[in-house]
Image (cartoon, rainbow, N blue to C red; front, side):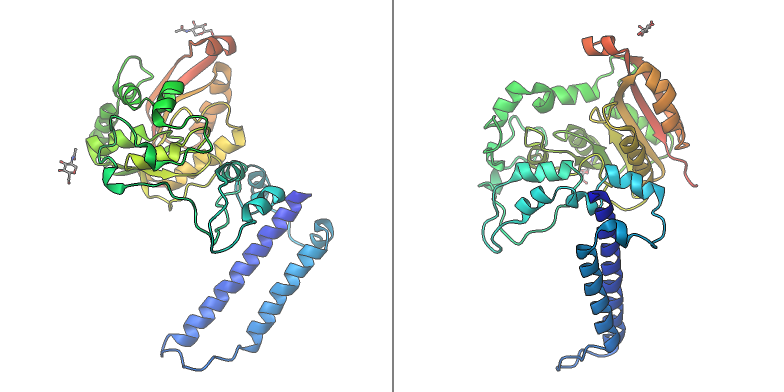
Amino acid sequence: MGFTMGLNFLLLLAMVATNILSLYHLSTTVQSPKPPPPVAIPIPDHLIRQLNDIRAAINHLTRHSPSTSSTGTPAVPRDLLLHSQIGPIASSCHHHPDLLHRYMNYTPFSACPYDPDLQETLILNGCHPLPRRRCFSKTPSKPTSSLPLNPFPTALPDFSEIWNRYSCKSFACLLQNNPTGFDLNAQRSSLLKYASELDLPVNRFMQLAKSANSVIRLGIDIGGGTGTFAALMKIFYNVTMLTTTMNVNAPYNEAVAARGLVPLHVPLQQRLPVSDGTMDLVRCGRAVNRWIPLPVMEFMLYDVDRVLRGGGYLWVDRFFSKAVDLEKVYEPLMGKLGYKRVKWAVANKTDPSGLKNGEVYLTAVLQKPVSR
Ligand SMILES: *[C@@H]1O[C@H](CO)[C@@H](O)[C@H](O)[C@H]1NC(C)=O
Ligand SMILES: *[C@@H]1O[C@H](CO)[C@@H](O)[C@H](O)[C@H]1NC(C)=O
């Protein structure tokens, strides 16, 4: 019943937040006309009552089983139940008390424990954002003057990373063991080439946008690995792209940062950390595919819609699924957004696993309606 407890925790959080807000409100209305008097302000009675209520609620929630405390509370919205099972609201941290306790077990004001794997596990389990800690994270010895200005350096600087937790101890090793992930020049060529209708070279996309009188300045590349897409958009078009990326078996976030680009350490099920209607483009690379649970995909697409401005673009690059699922599941799912199809190309996935599973690739550019 950790889930119900989680919900209770969420409600508690909401309540505490509301109380803090009213406190804030009170303090600003009380203090705004004149500077605060030098003596301590006596705490008004109703504030003390509020604080007592908060304390009582915390005691109640920690003492009583969730099933008894939830009687009489209004029904929980269906989408909150659904989302809280897949996505990061505060409850997700409480599903993993053992990990969370390990993470928060440190000596304040001294060096943090070195636990990036623990952090990664918590984040991937939806505990995001992680709680803040009052300790000093280990910093690699980074002589900033030797960081490259060019996002396509001949080699990424190894000193920008702490290698302890990885089997590789250098970017050269990663390049050898994981060329798909770390061959920046191969990635660059593949984003610029046009070899099949699944390809959409960056310059072709920019032409599409330009011919629609749509300016592209800002965007997010979801699951963007080492940030090569952001690098191209920066050097060719001065476009600022954020790159969401996880450190799965390699320091992807640090690689992105070493290229002078902004990495967002955010899992796929996480609400994008930008405000509504602010982005011109959201691109989903191959990290977004049929292995993503459908509810996660669905919430993600609507979050993309939230952050896109009117007339902004969703670019799906080589999404793969079974052919039948594309037709029956994913195409209707994307269709529900009501976007204009600027590009829609489907082709067989011809590698062994694609042939075995009857998979296809989809590359699509969809434009959000200018107003709703
Ligand atoms: C990018 O910005 C720089 C500095 O403002 C400018 O010199 C350059 O021409 C711009 N490049 C493009 C492709 O717009
Ligand atoms: C794609 O694969 C299906 C069967 O999986 C086949 O019937 C079809 O002809 C293929 N299409 C092309 C263009 O090769």
